[in-house]
Image (tube, rainbow, N blue to C red):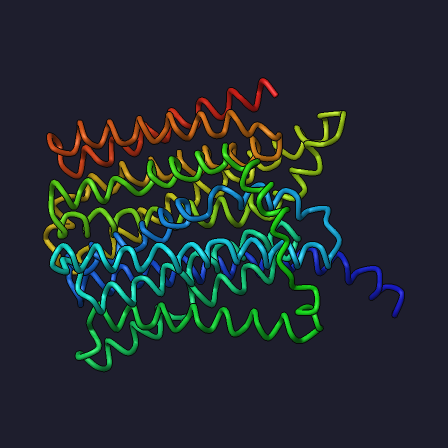
Length: 419
């Protein structure tokens, strides 16, 4: 009996972990989905627009201040000894922290010089969120590089899935809590909890003894990461600049409409890409290093199949959810633009497929191609948004999103064939 249990236990663990990862991802995306609905219904579309801009900033700022080093460091962490990996992670996280300490006061000075167009409480709370979210997101990617997939996803749940239900219930019970600042306070508290948890893990097994700064190594990482820096800047810009263009041309309410549609559709992206592809990234990197490409191509085909199935199922679920929930929000502006949602949903499905091939290019060390593609993608996205949004409004932004994603998918797919 003991021998049978010993034999079955590894197989049960292999089956259980993907289910746990999927459950955590569903919880995260579901929580953010419900938060978007709650904000639209009880706070207002303008507040949802501001929240959407801050969410965009949590991607744009790390792309700017991360100097492109995350992918380079993650790829090297896969084969590092434990003590060296801990020191490397600590050094990598110290880099954006130091840059935030320098850059954020400059933003405060600029805000004061312009007559405080951003309210000071929002600026300070938003700045703290940007800092903690930035280094938490980086830590998540680095843990994936060390194959700590479950820990990375649990920590992601703490900062993405745990706090929205608390804020929603609080707001439903106490109408005075239905404010943007209460929402942001919940987000900030969750990020503090993440770092308390990471600190406890670091000290629990004396891992802190391995913490040190590897400055020469970090300098070499920055130098080698120029293609990734270009990719990060342009990739984040092509994904999130549309809502800033929308806010400039159409105002915060329509930006809120687009944010809600994007949030619902992004459930598809998160569950399909980060539950199916990202956990296999270390294995993709290893298989890509083999002289015989057969193993890599077999893994690629398996991931293609899994991703396609998930995208199709989740697209149907998102459509049904939107058709049921939209009338309950009592926002006529959402109903009037429902057709835009379906374009955004299709564009998100295409983006998920394109990002899957982005992971494959990373595994194949196509660093220069990654950078060139990202620059072209950002240029196409910005050009299309500036051209189409003033003429077609939300429909123009959705069309730009779809055209950019389709182009990105075609180019990345072609490059993986040539590898």
